[in-house]
Image (tube, rainbow, N blue to C red; front, side, top):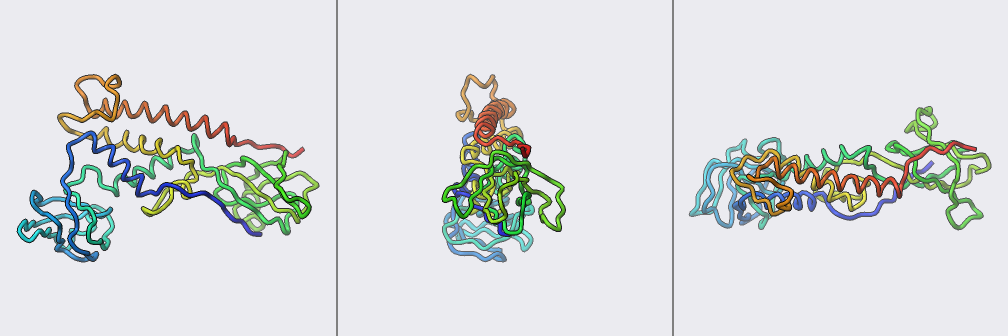
Length: 301
């Protein structure tokens, strides 16, 4: 048996994080930034930057790493951290290249935003699910064919034999769980009608829980299995979670329609307005997904 997966590619995890931060920065005053003047290793404690003026002791962010700065030299344009200052607050120590952005006391560290992105992705199920495709070689199988481990339901089944150039839709099938793992490693399979021989090849569209992203280069569609349009749902969901914790005297609210807010503008009001947008977009995506890729169990006739 061979199982292959074919999924299209699109937006990256890193670009989603950057988009969330870009929109969130519209609610607060701009952050102070500079750039790395030269490459640094993951163990360097003296960090040369383009301009250290205005920096002081505190936290800086380079990539997704947080660094605790204990001394600033505005003449030499260097920031110094203690040996324990790299990889601060559970972020991951890493080497960085000349020219990378350095942000002073970031309101929304990328590592934090990334975790929130994945939390939203995981909580979308079962309202939203990934739709993946698997082709299964049926050698050795009769009426029950194995499915991938991440299959949570079946959307569509097609088969192709030696005498068929095109995929033929299977009109009757049954999604089955709890199968013996000695024959079906995932314990999941699809039961087909009698008459489809063991020499055919099967193509199954199946529903799966969205998979979190791990690397900044991970593609949103390829990793999560969700359509590209769900990206907006995810960014809104993250914004709702992060804006409700803001504690500032005055928020910039140009990201939200004035009619959606009551005076005085508050973090709770902004989060509430974004929350309504999130719920509306989530429902739109749910309806579109379930209309295009409904999950159903067809009994074998």
